[in-house]
Every structure is written in C-alpha cells, then in structure tokens.
Amino acid sequence: MVHSATQRSYLKDIQQLYRTIEASTDGQASILSVDEMSVMISLQPKSGNNAHAAFNVEIKCPVSYPRDRPKVTFTSPIFHPNINNNSGGICLNLLSEWLSCYSLLDVVKSLLYLIDNPNFDEANNSFAYLENKVLLAKKTMRVLAGLPVNGKRFAPNKSWCEWAEAHGCLPVGEKEDDEENGEVPAVCVDVGQGSDDE
Image (tube, rainbow, N blue to C red; front, side, top):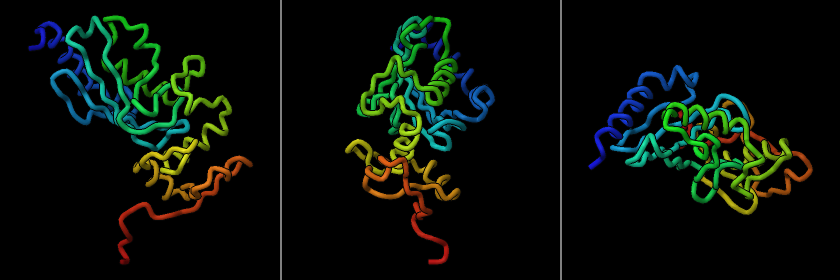
C-alpha cells in the first residue's frame, strides 16, 4: 500500500498535469496513461533534430516521492547523447539535483528542453555522442526513419515518418556511407499500409 501523504502528493501532481500539460508545453506533451505511481507521457517536440517525432516516456515515482526523485525512462527509441539507446535511461540535471519542490510537470518540461538542447558535458550514451551538429542531425534523421546508424537499427518513429513523407524529406538507403560525404539521400516513400487508390 502506498503511503497516503505520498499518494496525495503524487495525485496532486497528476491532477496538475491533466490541467496544465498541454498549455504549459505548447502542445508538445500529453498524458497517455496513469497508474498508481507512474505516468506514461507522449512528447512531441516542435523544434530541433527530433521535431515532428513522438516519444513515449514512463515516469515512475517511488513511494517516497516527492522527497525522492522519479525514475524516467524513454520507451521509444531516440538518438540523443543524454538518453541511453539500450535502457532508455536519461541523464537529466533536474533528476540528479532533485528537490522535493519539483513536480511531474517540471520533469516533462525538462525533458522537452533536453531533447532540443543536448548536454554534451554529461553524455551517458557513446552511441549518440556527436558534437558535430550536422552529423548529429543526419544520424537522428536516419534513426527516426528506421535506417541503420552505427550498425544498429531501431523501429521507425511513425509520427516523424508521416511528417517527413508529407514534406518530401524521408531519408532512404541502407548504407551509412551516404552520409560520410555530408549527404543523406531523401526521397518520398510510402510508410503507410497502402494508398486509397489500391
């Protein structure tokens, strides 16, 4: 059984999220589901390398929340130097310097900020550690499209692929060599289940 004072604080934060998450994040975050001590959030950044993608994040609160920090895990693949591509674990200053006055909304806002502003001084993911911003953008695009990067392949980000297809910038090509000369071929391909004409 969850300690009642902790649960009240968690429930208060959840109520605040329901009331303010969309307005407080300019429509870049929404609640997918809520459990006894965890919440699943969808993040849809509007800017940066991951703009137009959708990422699911689980925020699990310990029984001692808000005194102790929540555990935050990306359940969707993301190419980012501060987010572990294997575990979804995240390196976020707000969590490492946690104070009980912080709320779940603060966590969500910090995640959106971090997605758009990688912290190369505190990287926890050598797979996505690239200070070359042009190469970081290109590899991010390949990961979002479901193409191989550094010998690994992740499921395509459906939201981003739909946007990229509509805007004619969906990268194709299995070979990463294409980006060594600074070019990533992009063509319009159908990522759906078929067209209405079929």
